[in-house]
Amino acid sequence: MLEITFYDETGELSPAHEELLEGLLNVAYEHLGLKGTVEMSLTIVDDERIHVINREYRHVDRPTDVISFAINDNADEEDIEAWPEELPYELGDLFISLDTTKRQAEEYGHSFERELGFLAVHGFLHLNGYDHMEPDDEKEMFGLQEEILTAYGLTRA
Image 1 (cartoon, rainbow, N blue to C red):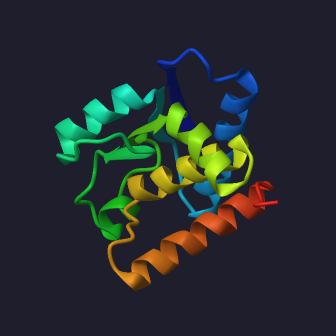
Image 2: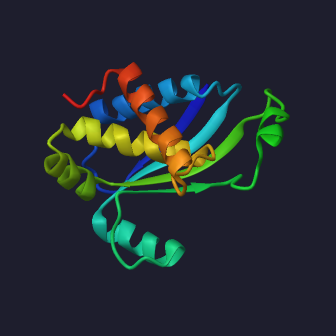
Image 3: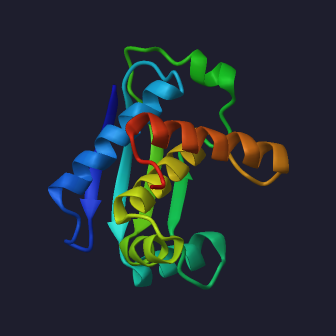
């Protein structure tokens, strides 16, 4: 079971969008074959706040769309599989800029919901050890993103 603690620093996230994120991330949890109770936080922020986070933690002086902080960043698959199912497993924290989500949805020509879902799944995969630094890793991660979004029904159309 996936337990998500939501924070909306913007005050703009609707209950329907929170439900979308919860449902989508639960599909991602199942798609990755995660077991037991997995906990994470998801914070919706504005461009100003994500800019500060990006500058402080990634040393990149500009806003971005999504930032993830995995608690067990150095855990390998064996460590995760050995985790006792009766104990909650803490993934980490996910931050999404609502300003950038809106802007990118318009730029890419798809719905706000599709962009919000894409960013949530992207960050969730980062929390689970996926990255896109190498071409093969990028292909795997972006393929998983599309599989999860399609399984939930958030297609590009």
